[in-house]
Length: 202
Image (cartoon, rainbow, N blue to C red; front, side, top):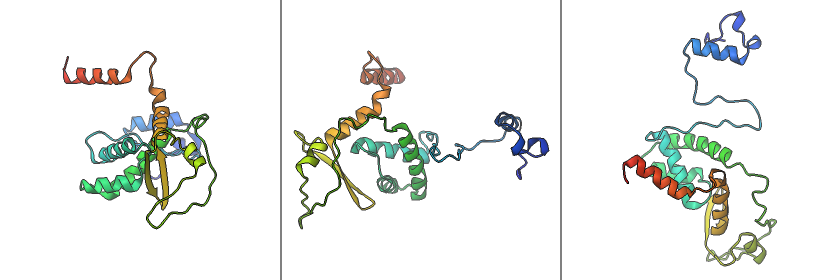
């Protein structure tokens, strides 16, 4: 290779194994990038989370905050706008948002039965009145679990209106954190106990 990492015939990439390459890397104390891209169609690059207190880490924190507040994945525009409001760099926000999004999507990969209790309704034309009112048909309201709780969260992304009911948002969060549930343990109490121990409180 041109950079000398595998200089010499015996270190040619076509004839050395991964273990050989990593031995060379360790021997020469070569710094590795924060992620290594694997060229496969179905496995996107997933970056490790930046350290807390850094400018890049703040972008991830903002994305997490917006996601918790809205009950769905934060959009790029929301994250960049909030970072700019904090006088952050929009270019850094754009780059880190893309990395956060890849990490988020990998962590919440949809299980086979994820939406088994949620309905689906095919696309159909609706009309928005001059004052902005939109009537949602009954079958759509039922699929959105709006019965008994009319509250929704809405946002526009790439020109498309997305509307999520509070009950659907809660179910999504429950599915997301279900793998973290430990039998017989109240996660809230466990979290508070950890923080009290960290802060030296009784």
